[in-house]
Length: 411
DNA sequence: CGTCCACAGGAATGACGGGCGG
DNA sequence: CCGCCCGTCATTCCTGTGGACG
Image (cartoon, rainbow, N blue to C red; front, top):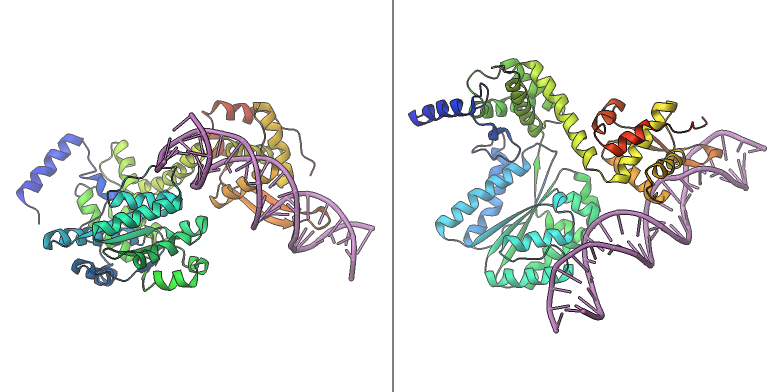
């Protein structure tokens, strides 16, 4: 419904921003929660139904939600919690919600601290025993006489790093307190993670399961059309560009977040060019830019020794055009550390760092057996050499390393 | 067909910066 | 202020192992 006010608003905004592309670019940001979520009606109904007992003061079942990245899990859950809170406030039922991203929180302790925060209990960011935090949480929760719905997003990251002890504790909170209840929603994009769970935790956590299937290309198109309408000035997005964005994201396991990112970034690119229309080329450029930015910020944020290891692999590949094995890398790494006057880490630690970089796709490492010549890892750069060079070209120590010529490694 | 290389990667332990309650 | 416990990063010590060589 386009009222006079909206039209006028558009005019103002266009004037203020001077943009020929955007009306409201925030609509395309990943944390934006739209007022409607197309093609997810089924899941919304299902989850809403499971949670609604909270409105009447009884606990809904725990839910396990599974789906790949960008299938709308987080958006749907946040949307429902939002509505639930509003409704709860309206009819005066006591209820709290708490959303935690386990990967960002990182440890049992920080997740608990977050939980405490959501019921207004301040916890220092370090210093207490984890069990102490849990106890305080239970006591305060009980006093509060409420239903707390806790969302543990990326719960697989928690279990992989910390094990399922915390989940076990949380599930059992209900047994220890009288006046409040907790219900847990676990969100994962890795289905295999269920194998890592204690059977008791698993059965309790997945009292209900909801699956989010990847969006198909037409569904993505639909979503993009809806968002583009709010976000872009009329006609700013060409149909070809829209279809391309949907197609690229569909190829990437139906990732809606990726699709929206493509639109936002391509819009910014078009704007920067002074163009008033987003065409296919902008989408393609956006695709490259997103990938490049991801790698770039990751590489810059790395701890020093990881950076040195990357430079090591870079230098070996560049000078000898071979894939080094752990021994080669470690030898050269020590050499570079000496250059920088830095104490080298042990081989064990370097091996661990290489594995971390492998997981993040910066390096590719593969365990191979060279028979008589041992069992080791072949290591390659996972990103183009030029990217490494470019990204580290404003890091003084890296320049020193990159210009330092290492001694040849025998083939 | 057994040996033995060159590591992989698990487990235990330590150093460190930090906050707690008393 | 002390003694304690935390998470994080690193070291030390260790056992395990695929397959070419002899």
